[in-house]
Image (cartoon, rainbow, N blue to C red; front, side):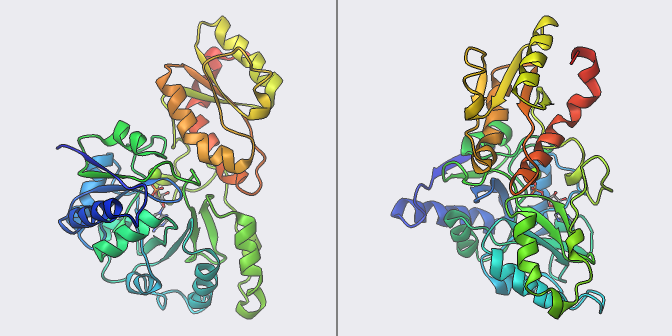
Length: 366
Ligand code: AMP
Ligand code: MG
């Protein structure tokens, strides 16, 4: 199969509209289209067509027990795809959904809700729940509207690999396996959406992401009394190592580069460990902050992520991919504080490093 690439620098331009019309046709015909969202690139198919959805799993080599996220462009679709009356009497989902969608949609918050009748079981891996979000990206929104159907879309990478934040990353993983890529430039947030399970009582963050725990807690606090949601403060996202696995998307090793990722306490620790790896003949790449640049001045290859948590989130996956391409054995990065967007970044770094933990004893003498 030849994968076509259509540029969409502006979804409203004549060129952009034509590209989106073509992509919508591919979706309606049961094909696969990679498209930009505000988080990462998604690999989309018609969510109501079980055979089209099956092609997503095949292209990504994703196991069938890892459910997908449905992308919608309006709230009516959310109602059609879910069954908000299916939950137990104790949890009144409607006001929760109303508050959260008003606060965060369109945006990087995915809601796990009871699955509606018309959603093919393959979409949610046979679970009786379904994950839905409304992306905040003009190309994604235009594509869903033009297709006229909800779009099932996981990240557009090979299963277990780092998510793509540019069209080139998508091609690096999936060229020849999908029909079309809409190239809308680099994605602005750079880490995936927050997955919030509203069928759990209290609601539970299954995956930290672009909307922070603090933001969700503030939004829910407004309705706490009215709802009597018992104890939503325990919106605990557990560490990837202790969490029961609701699906393989939550595997300890995920979002992983080819090289081993090693997390360091601080710059000194990073430099010491780099020396140790070098002694053992291993080639290291540094994933660093602007403020570490001077201390790491002549040490290459290196990738500078920027300074703020938003910079780090936006550039993290490009950095991991770039250092992989430079052929390093080990990527050294420093830990980030686990608050705000830092929670999602720390989660991804921990999962990317999970592979390394098993083997680090062979080569690290920190
Ligand atoms: P991706 O789109 O590749 O970022 O992956 C989708 C994420 O959403 C994975 O971590 C899935 O495990 C999670 N997810 C999707 N549907 C459900 C569901 N019904 N219940 C729990 N998690 C889900
Ligand atoms: Mg993914």
